[in-house]
Image (tube, rainbow over all chains, first blue to last red; front, side, top):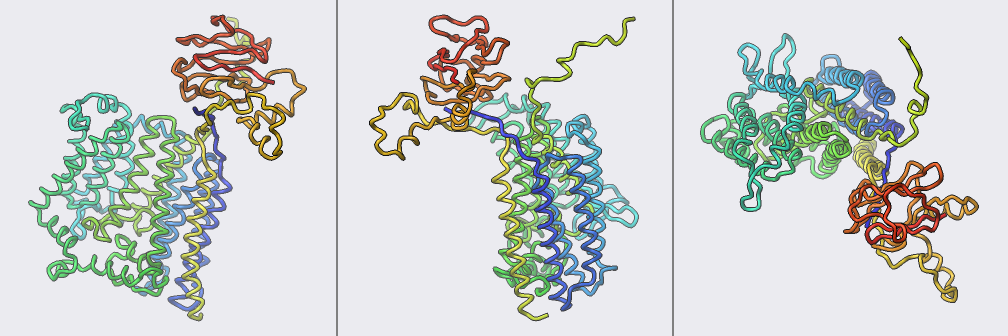
Length: 460
Length: 180
């Protein structure tokens, strides 16, 4: 007893502009707040950093108006605000460690932001239609697995702080897993669009779960073996969880079958349990997670304990930017940026940040619902889910929900590869949402060309 | 700078962050797109059967009761009373009775499939049952190969047939007519 009518969306570019101005204003307020709290005056670097930030934002917004006019108006402001707040916190930690703007990490982070936004703008300009990516499904798969395993190459990969997820390229060190996340999402989307019928229809029903046939288990077993390989050889639970979770989530979206999620979780639990029995570095992580404050754990690393203490001292409203001591924790600007924020803007502020991530993911999933092609749906849901899972791994790690692993918080954390990957991810989401929200041309509308009499172009 | 400035700034930052979240959620509410599903009330033949005039003792209640369900169409009826061409379709009986929707030049699809303009919840209707469109000599109805047929009076349609305002067209248990 319903009627269904089509609703087309507004373009929303002016809404986006308004929210972008709001986001830049919040970042400016936070930056001034840090300057006043630490040095007692409005920081002189405000003009330089602020101009850079505004120029990046304006360039991106103008590109959107020209190249993706129907794209979702909320994704860009949220990403801008998160990136800006990350910049403020990194600058604040620079000040705490006595580095000035020229030698500090904040300026480098700003440069990386510019580069990342530039790459995203280029992606929006070059990639006119996300469906082009489907042509490169298997190439993307090969590149993705290559990137994931690249840190294992001797001479190229380096082991930092217990995890082998970095590669050294001359003066730069790079985390290829971040880029692999996007490339693998493209691969999984293209692959599952082709194979989902076989994976979703065949099977028998046992105990209310439709279990797949044994021969259809191939892909999930390959993905599982790779993720366990990453866990064992690169000693990184985060990348392993991110990569395997992404595959299982996209498999679930493609096939609508709960049994894949059950099989995936079961396989992952078995893998983790075996790894915990066999490998000492995994046991160390579990010890730090379960008994953070025991003598044994504190002798190994007190990083997690310091982060927790920082958040505890922040309380509900926080100490205020510039008034806490987040610099006491190691990696306060990258892996532990969430405890840094928790200490200085408190639980209330931290929850605002988490809700911004939730909204970003929601817009990604909404884009997936609106997308009219199967590939776009799967890609958008995969990208959105990867952001959600990454946030879960990072926030879960620093709050002792799961063992701590070295992933970065998208947009907030200091790090070039993370920014490059996440801004490219945003560009892809914007491209898909532009496609999803563009009004469908009415097939029955009078077509001016069809009504013209056919012209004789050449008689001979 | 005094301590109070800093306190105001740090609390202001929290307020601003949440104001941003609220602004984003506000945009979400106004930014619906895709398809809209409008639930209809069940049939007590609203505005359909003429009510006795004597009942309009309370002037406020009756107009509200008699207001047609498809309000925009209803308003257009009044505006274009002079125009002789039918411009909306009214369901006269069946589960959707009382519903009306505007006729579109491009034609409207009637059937059980969700992309139809009038989605029938009628076990005797087909997925894509019939189409009403504007032909050269006015509005036409065409059966789209439905299982149980489209009828005008006792006659089952085989070819596109012109319909005028007031002609009753029957699909399954649903009867519709064009209205001016």
